[in-house]
Amino acid sequence: MKYKYKDNAFTKVKAQVVGETLEKIIKKNKGKVIPRTIVDAATPKRSPIHDCFEWDNSIAANKYRETQASYILRSVVIIHEYDDEDKEPLEVRAFVSVEAVEGGRYYTTINRAVQDEEIGLSIEVQAYNDYMALYHKYKDLKLFRQVHSELTKIKI
Image 1 (tube, rainbow, N blue to C red):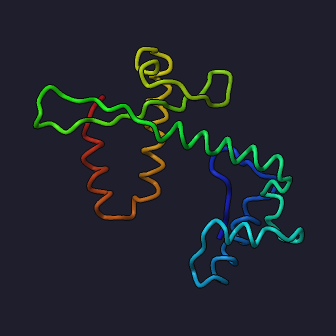
Image 2 (tube, rainbow, N blue to C red; image 1 turned 180 degrees about the vertical axis):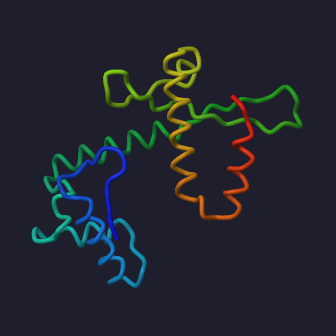
């Protein structure tokens, strides 16, 4: 099997090495792993995937808190209630991740994103890319092919 990273790789370890090592770990664990299993396998310095992780606890602790902050930003929604009581309230993410023109990502409010044409376009491009990634992940499933067939009929 040939492996590569999608998008920008975040690690110094080659994708082929990571893929093969993860396959071995999964096989060793009867076809099932959780992230903790991977971390445990990567802990020894001789592990091929050891350098994929931050082992300095002061740095790792801050990175974990940044991960928690991202989770918080992704978890908060705005509830839009309709005048028609028969309609279920609509929940929309309150904060969205945006690709910065100068590179990198940041979060902003959904209201700002909707009002700013440049940010809105960035989010639409990201939504399209997310959909295409989802399509490529599940295109072998019959139901998803049917959904994709119907979605491609929509003209924007």
